[in-house]
Image (cartoon, rainbow, N blue to C red; front, side, top):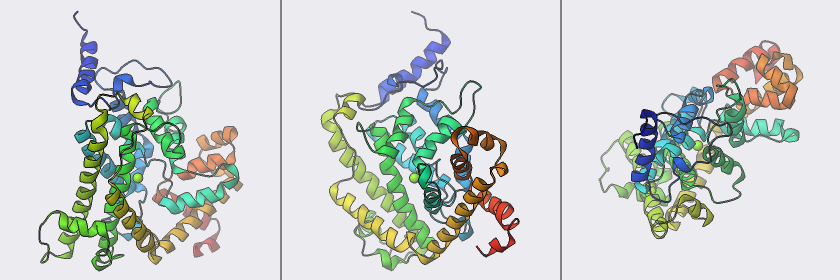
Length: 382
Ligand code: MG
């Protein structure tokens, strides 16, 4: 039978997955599809289309103006939410390729995973949570779904990006952590997220002078990373030491994750992705690396995330979000027209939540200046 040009191309991405992916990967041709039916694309698989829809969303571009841990005022070396997202995507794709999982799905999930973060990182999230206690609270994972299901508009007949069921379920699992064990691609992106921030927060905190090497040397994972390359760095300067440490921290964790996953997946190589979920198969680090990662995370929590310099910035940011929330709830006519319309259907508080949570740090600062400082000069003390 002679295939049309379009059928031949669609068949080609299906064929590519059949050749390259392991039986336990999520194959795009098995996708449960989208809420609103769409004809197949001539040359992109459903997960490639999802990845591109997230990439081209306004919320994704705004990640460049959102802090990860350290604010823009602290310099331009450290990670933003956008560069963190790319690090997660690349680490997850690297592991996914070795394990023969679906890299297109991995990339879509990774690009999506942090787009729901409000301005000012976790302090912005905590402030919104406090403001919305009587209105369902606030979760950046939930807001990511609100963005891709309601606020991002691309099509004339429905709101949202109309992503596949698998990508939405992966993001939903981040909220509930309940139900069937998620796809291996979903689990992998979660692990790559923590692996990436453990390593890059060490890098950024050292570069910003919030940490010293001497403080890190009692940590088991750091000692393991220093030994990893076998290269004597005794005479290297601090900058080379820092880069080497961070690369090795990533390598140690990635290598362990791959090795552990291969051991876990070897007996189930004949199963399909549904069986993997039904059997509750989990990707994880080996017990020793998992405990060393936890030790590093505890250390970062006590010594970096609670550093007096960051605590002060967080309190400042948190007050800004709170004041803006109160101001806009009191005077919803100051919202942009589409959020005034949204307030009619979901209520003022939730519409203000959606407007505030979508802001970059910079835009939130400028709104604070125009709506609070210029309107109430005494507020400059904040
Ligand atoms: Mg993340």
